[in-house]
Image (cartoon, rainbow, N blue to C red; front, side):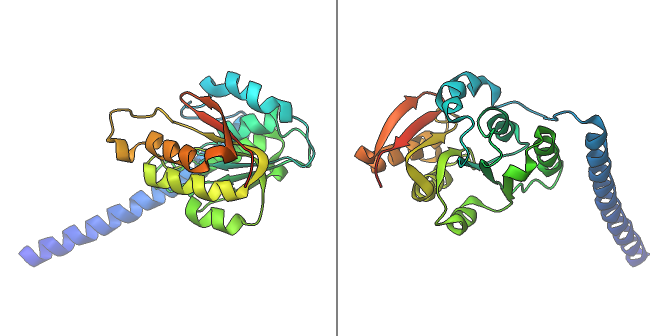
Amino acid sequence: MHRTLVTCLNKVTRASDLTLKYLRAVREKQFERQLRRVGEFSYTSDWTSYNYSNWETWFVPYRGQPNLHILEIGSFEGRSAVWFLENVLTHPGAQLVCVDPMPWPVNPPRPRFMHNIQRTGRASQVTLIQERSEIALTQLLPASFDIIYIDGAHDAINVLADGIYSWELLKVGGLMLFDDYLWEPDKPEHSRCQRAIDLLLKHFGDRKTLIHQGYQALIRKEAE
């Protein structure tokens, strides 16, 4: 009796798991079709727009340049990528590379990201590398970028690695922007973004100029 009950429960559990996987796949397909019908930008959160006034000062002067190359580490649903496409990368020869593994098993951001990029009408200017940054950035060498925006994993080790790799990809005279410099100030110092960024600023020394240091930190590369 006990074995029969256990066997039945196992069958029910396997069936439930298969049902959940099926329903999740159906929801994603339905969501993609819905987005195509709606034809508007779609976001579930906004951690970006409060930066726009600063970005206009820093980045809009690059607007319309034909061979402009921007690298974004951490793209989520594409809100910052859309801003760059609409306000800076306006020449058809300009390019945006987005690096994000998009690892979320539930409600993954990729459908929204792809939809929002398509909505700009500039999808041909975008390359998405769906990979961890420490792998993707080494694969990008020896490419070079005019602007690099670092907003990936929010722990000191990953921010430090992103900064070191990105420096090798940044042109002399190029800009590197770090997000979340002041994020989660109550976390232990060794695990905060701020700690990693401070170490990078010290490491780059006279080879960089610090342009802004607030919730975001912006530097210009002056020398290799």
